[in-house]
Length: 298
Image (spheres, rainbow, N blue to C red):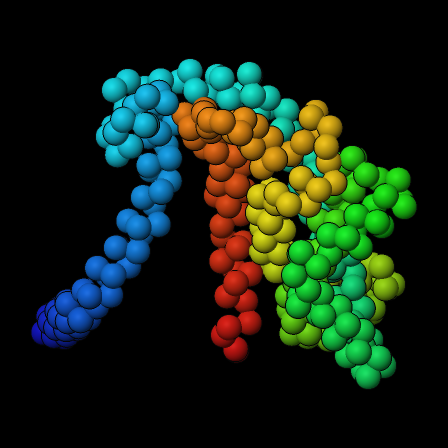
């Protein structure tokens, strides 16, 4: 019995040593790749770190020595950006428009993608799907005049409703494309089980399809949130009242045409990044699940 236990321990020890040697060989072979990825991380983070340091400097420090560290941690730039430049109001406007536009984008795109993925008339479904995907080929510049006329005729000019309508419409093609591909992979047995439980079409969509599609919905939400939060051109075109401006257009006020307040602008940019980072931090697990869903079969 003792000899058997000793033999087993020796076998386990040899297996562990072999595994460690294999890992060491893989680590040495992957060293160039790790160095390359490390360099990529440094290059990617450098602008953010430089921006953060600049937000604590004075305009003179930024002008005289751009790359130096701040002499003191000057939080006055954040106070000036938040109070004097109305960044708090612009941030609230951006959050309001972005969240409502994302809600309607997810609702409409999920319902449309589900209908297209389950439509019995396959030829009609493919034609409607292809027509929707044509929106991916239209550049924003080609939409300025028709959208401007449409918004005016609907009496929505200089309102947040105009931005919500435009953001939602512009995001629909890519979100329908992602959700339709995901929903086509959902097995029909799940819906058949829901029908056996007495669910109708609305019940199937709300209680079966939406929970299963949640990783893809989170991914689509992040894409729409970042796109709407950073959008500048449509906001500049459809909103002119100062109190209705969103964050990207509001930050343009730091440049009066003759000079730019770089210190306060850096602080405002840091403030504008925080909501996106928070959303990504809380939803990063679902984002990874949504991006990898369907990549492995079985």
